[in-house]
Length: 127
Picture (cartoon, rainbow, N blue to C red):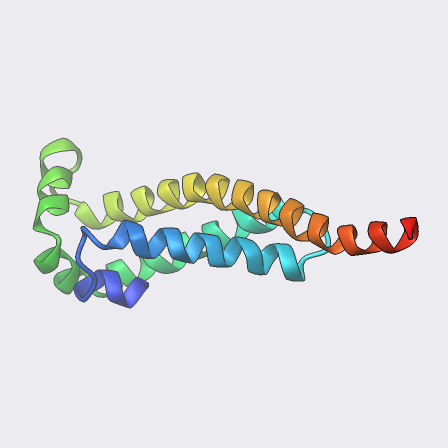
């Protein structure tokens, strides 16, 4: 997504892509982690936020060209002379926030997957 959000994926489609990615990541975390699903989801999102922020800074010119609305908001609100700094810290904060969401989704997905795994065993014991 980091390369796609720079110039390919429109802002209107981006939330749909992120929702799909979050659900997929939550089930992967729930399937392959054995414990601490919430913390694993949080760590994945924070790591992703750092990666995204770095890519947006590396491709700053392309990003600003394709995201004029967001850049206008940054310039009007805070630090118009240093938009890269604002982008970096905004990315980290949004990563922490999305980490809470992914952590919660991972915890829920773990509950769903582990309940499915236990149901056949419970039925075979009763038989």
